[in-house]
Amino acid sequence: FREASADIWQFNKTIFSTMAFVGLFSKAIGAIKGSLDFGAPLERVEAQFERIMGPKGDLLKSFAQATNSIVDEQSLLTAGLKLGELGLVKNNEQLASLTAQMAVAGRMAGKTATEGVSELSEAFASININALEHFNLLQKSNPALLAQFQILNKSGGILGNALVKQQQFAMMQRILFEHTKDYMFMTMSTGEVVEGFGTSFKNLRQSIGIFLATALRPLLEKAITLFTRLHFIVDELRRSDKQILFLVKSVLALTAGFTGLFATLGSLKLLVKLLA
Image 1: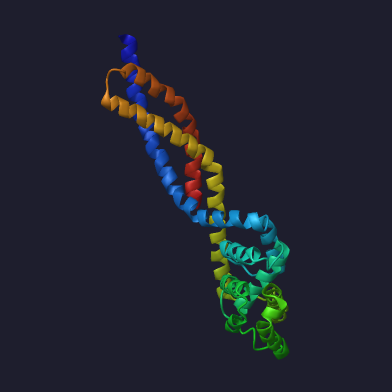
Image 2: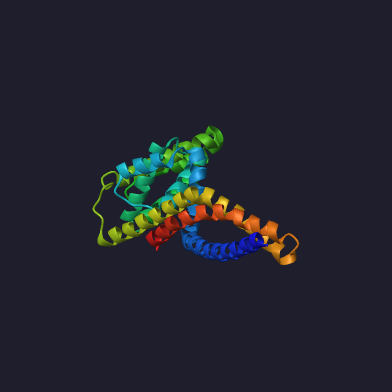
């Protein structure tokens, strides 16, 4: 009887401390959920991009070497996906050069670098030369080049659509390059500096979200297992008192698992403070 009483006393103590931990753990997880959600869209695009074009780090490094423009990372990868899936760019180095020119063209047209990449990648993917007019890219272009572009439109049946598209894409690249080649590292305005800071911070938050998702996945899977078992045990306690001592000992056995999660809580709280 004394042993049973001791077990029940220990059980009550464990229940209260465990539920208190569950509350703290859930609060910490809820606080960083926003960061996980914030990084989720980028994580999906990144996975698709790396399947087609290779490591995104290669693209980001080459882009930073090509221009001082700062763009939203998700928009850059999305643009790369559009062009890569169509076979219009062959590798990350070529993609970085092209998207860097798009970013600069956006800035020169009074848009943000991110808008330049997003809008011009769409125009290039659809081989829509008229869209370049919105970036003042056609005003200084060689009229003969534009005439040749239109001639190619009419000769698709003869040369084959794929070959025509490749030639037209190359012409649009030439127009973009000639327009931006002397401005790849042009001085940022005050507005661009502020915009760039906001974009850089957003990129950082997205990267942190992806890092947390990767780092915490094993922990969260363990927590789900423990919480599921605790829910089962408590539910059994509610429905039956026949196995009370067995259930008490089962709850006590879970204490070791929750003790391990306690150590992680400190790290979670630190992460929450950093992301606040």
